[in-house]
Image 1 (cartoon, rainbow, N blue to C red):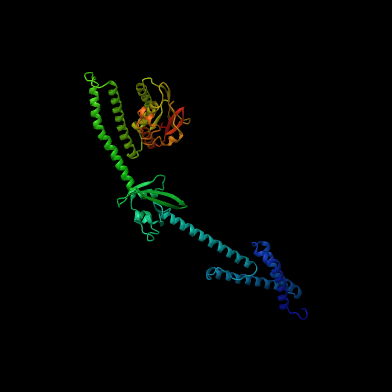
Image 2: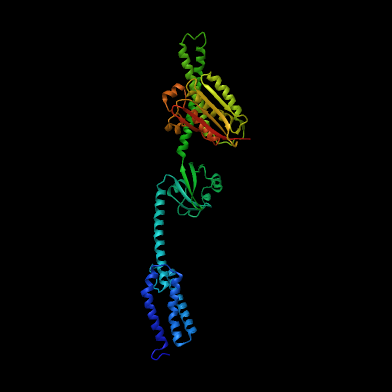
Length: 457
């Protein structure tokens, strides 16, 4: 033992010197950096170095190292207790005081809590904005999990669907909307097309379900009662008007037949009779097209199983078109034999005939009309196309051509005798056969109308 200095005093003196070195050279640098192996080794050396020095001076080095390790272990346990108390019992944001690497850990946890608090605040603001926006939408919104459990709905869902919020929180939507069609729609998870239901409240509601996040969905419900009633009224109007116009038109055509008789043809000039006959036939065709369009729009989608030979159908249409055209145009038909599809014979004949007639009406006399029916290279689809040599159609008109009564040029349409319904019929026929009309046109060079259907063996 050194004279005048005991073991404890020397140990405390050594700790004070090394602690001062740590404060001057280490503390600020550690607080600004994350913990590393180097910082742990540095702290370990700071703790054991005084014990090693005392052990070398007074002997019993292993015992002094054990004392240092026990002190280090007790110091860590004390800070773990502080951490546990702060996390589970203390409600303040201020971390407990600490030394060494525990000060870095507490500081890091404090920063993590501040970031989480900021994120929670941002998330709460985002949710508040979302719900505020959802309340202003014209649709009822219900948010469900993948198994149908409701966890939020807006006020319109309470009014339209009869939900009660928050009483219905956690309820399964199938238990609240007890309709077999809706249950199959939700459980089937095939949400490509909407579902329209007539509720017990005598409302017609259209449901759409869309993925929101992982394992969560948004159910959108819209009241379409007035829309459906308007569609029914419009359909009834077309049907009634068509039938009511058909009766006097039949009488008119009968009297025209009488006037064309040789005994009576002196009553009216021949030109007047021809004009009356042409207009009556145009009116008769318009009525038939309106009835056909009405049936297509409101008829339930069918699953077609009838095997149809498009090649034979187009050959028959070719003979009819050439006979009616009387060599006014130059026809080119390219028909690949043996092409069959599944569909409705009358609907497809109507669609193909409308496209051919449309080309005849808008192609100058003696100009060429090319009609093709051919399979693709791997024989999975058959393509029908009609290329005319007319004036062409401006690009801005093409998206509207399949709308009812849409006319690109009123004067030209009157000259050709078109009704503005033919392409609308084609559109609905192709939609029922899982296809769509493709239109390519260039002003001054003509237009091409085409569609493709799945080929049947």
